Length: 528
Image (cartoon, rainbow, N blue to C red; front, side, top):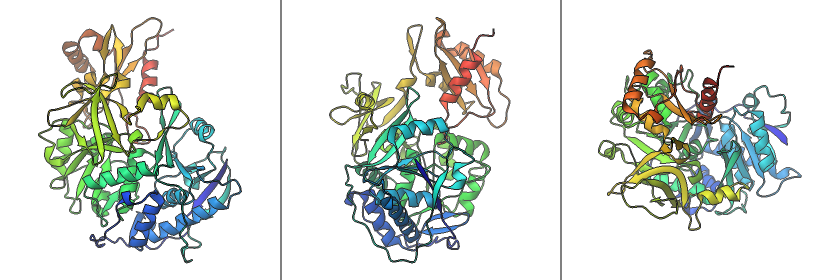
């Protein structure tokens, strides 16, 4: 497969347009039948307004559109081009990513985003699954991989002065637009197939719930190759807002400084990032005058930490959200004014989405009963790439997505999570969830993960508890073990307690349970 390097050239001088007219009105995403068409409308209206800012310069909506058209021309000129061809992007958050993403869609192709830090074996599996037409990257994003030899370098700036000729697109709302590869339960990649309708509908739903405006400046640290990061990209790009593509270093200590110095108005992150911000990031030490709101999604941030974040950023509101890749991104929101009265809730489904709690036979359960959280709406994926069996496991005939999250709803229609169903294990005939163990000690140790180590040689499945210190205080393992032994039945007590400097994170900043499972297995390996 050919690899093409994208090159920006010399961007315009950085001129942050903080006072951009917030009254600019963009057509609702749902009025388009193609994500690229929706973006064109925004780019034409916003013109010279900054779509993205980096440490090296600013890139207007007009620049991104013209650069995307350069990508389109290249793809369409290839002899092996065909409409619907997958195009892989191995790019960090950057103006090049925006050009490659929308340029691929403008060429009527399908985007396949890949993490920059990706093992060659994992990438090879994905290539074998979807056979991309080409891989687009930057020299700095490929690292020193000797197995990749670029065949061309595409300049995104050389023809910016030419008149724009907008293409007529053949792909419609139900056609495939993007494939997001995630880790499957078997260790093999699962390709989440998202249509133009999925992406447009989810962006439209979120724009109903969050006060995103054309004059917003959002500090963007979530990788665009993941569902949550892609959601941030689409909702802000389709609103005419500015994406601040700085990479704070050292992370996370400089995030608060970046929010203040770059006059950012919004920020979104996963729970692990907020936990680290509270520990290391000095959140709340200095006022963030421009901040309008923050959001969390991509996992469950403990209730007391949610309240602490909300207090530290006040009067800016803090939105707790919930979602998953198979539903394009976000599915539910808890309004900030309900944070304290709905302890631990993920809120209600966002505009255009339905929820229900179902048993193993997909029968709806009453309020208070714990079962599978199911979601339905135009944001629910088409299915898994070339995997009808896995698709049938999660998508019902009447369009419900079984999210794999256990939950219940209260009498007022608010929903509460009880952990991932696939993390449930049986020990001595009892069903146990790691969250039950984590909840016992997480108030003292926000960075905690209980990992089930599969049975070996006839032994029972066992738990290893990983802990990272809070506020640099040493971990009293003896005390933690004693608490578990006193408060938990014997079959739930971890057999080993391991202290780490920090919990390993995935490229999406979530706790990497795969790494912890491998470490736990080694820790419990018998000495020979």
